[in-house]
Image (cartoon, rainbow, N blue to C red):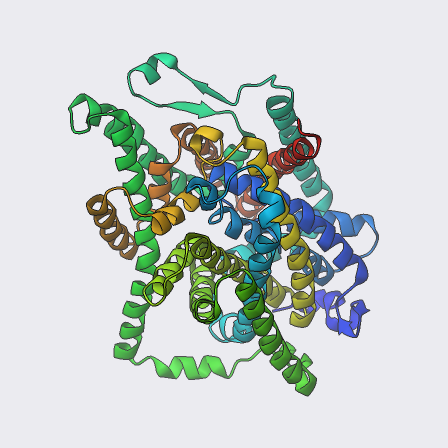
Length: 574
């Protein structure tokens, strides 16, 4: 995967630390410090937006810029630094997409929650991170080398690093948009010079609950996920806020606005859960088709094409692999039992984590999408079918699964980048674990800080947390079973026909104000893509990368500033 002219980036030319080729002290330090910022930013983004784009391009450019400031560097050192830097992002996502349900259901209150539950949250997050680490190490060779799954996010990150000669321009765009977004957020959330949203009282009085959220982060997210998904997202908002609520009440399908709102929320959550249920169904169909087609010969040929870099491991690597499998699993078991899950639920949880994390690794490799909270719901429902668990344990199970699935997807993206660049998997593993441990602590602290600042969870608080609301419905009970199960069936069918039903469901659940500004970002992407098609192929890729970097800066600036304001207010009591 490495060109001859890139030999300056091969193992023989790299730094070494603790006997591990390509691992350097400065890449670890930069990665760990960056993990703190990215993790905190990701928590804010996930709670505020109910979405969390991969931070991979963002951290690739940031790692590149910082390491080049320190002197000579290599592609692999940059890749290993960004591996640590992105490690905590999906841990934040796993927590934000599940545990806020404890506030939604009333199991936890705002006052004293951090002091009472922080250690338990930290323990369950560490368990998910460790189990995800084990699974990725076991499956790395199969998914990256044998099956050669595309992992579009990891591939894009590798190409960004390889194009590092223009790092000055890239870092200028990144830090410029980040600074703009940070100042904008400070003026809006701290000084109150800018309104949170623009709404029409006249329309609200007529049950058209529409408006636009004033957020550079949301524009950046819309740009990153593209016009297709933002269009489907906005379609869900149109169904809810321009049809179901206003027309449903006007035509007396619903007695009140509250009843119409409950209907659209239940339908949206059902679509999201249906998408998750469609994933294993699609694998079953895929497996049957593979058996019927009997395409074994091609697989056997591929299995002989193993990456020569695997020889780094040797006998010592085999022993290390056994330790990496057994020890983290034992630690995770102890942590889950200490959280109050019990022995049997903990064993079932570990089994469920391995199954769903493998599914998450596959779907991330094929599509770049990782519906981590849906996997959490699937394991939660499966365990509840065998044993009785209380509400808090149910949320902890969903959180552990979501964290492991998200972390697995992130690490496989990094392994894909490493495979393209020639990075040592062992160095990446150490870097990921270091960033993951620090990220786990930051993610847990950030979750309590942000929820404390906003005074709770819910659309009315400014923290819609759509995924956590879906999990809470599974734990506490659904509003309208007929609507919910019908939406699940529709979600499964739409997923099997390649329609992004999960995005449609998110649009139905989230406030219209968020969906409209996300659409704005998608429209910007649509317009810029039209202009790019007139350029040469090389220029198209370059300009697309520039837009993604700018969008990442908008996302990162608001996310980091939002968390900083939340932490300061929590400490000062402001």
